[in-house]
Amino acid sequence: SEQVSPILTELENLKLESRQKMEHKNREISRLQSALQVAEAERQKADNEIRNMKMDIEQWERRVKNAEEVRWRAGMNLAKAKAEMDWRQKADQEKDFFMERMKEELTRLKNKLMRTEMRKLKVEESLEETVMELRGKKREMEQMKARVDGLVRAMQVQPSGM
Image (cartoon, rainbow, N blue to C red):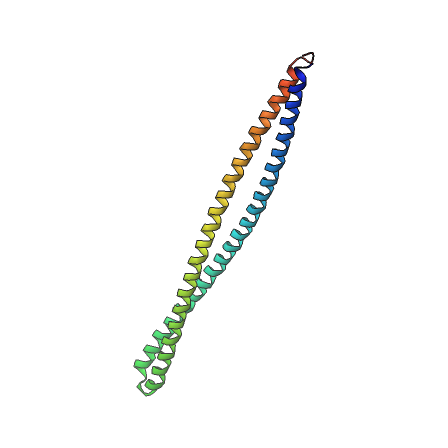
């Protein structure tokens, strides 16, 4: 009985310490899961922004193509009607200005898309790191649980008369 009492006390201490560590790990896992949810929401938001920007770029590209077609038609009409040359020349200048503005806007949107892609990559990298950290914490918790289970089984196997 004198030999078993210190062992039981040590086992109780280990059990308490294990519970405390497991609670700490559970809190840490909850924190990491929350961070993972936030990162997922940010990634989804970035995906939505990218999708919207791609649609904007497609729309601007269609506008640029349409503007180029309009400019070409204006050039054809210019050759047909010299009497309207001054008016057509002014229209071409306005179209050039409009095309330039559209090309600048397209460049701006492409740059914005690239920055958003970079943010998305950073969020995904952070997400992967968080997942790896979660897996490590889960392994630690499983190892700790296995040790506690082993100690409990060892206590049950030992004769109670010692």
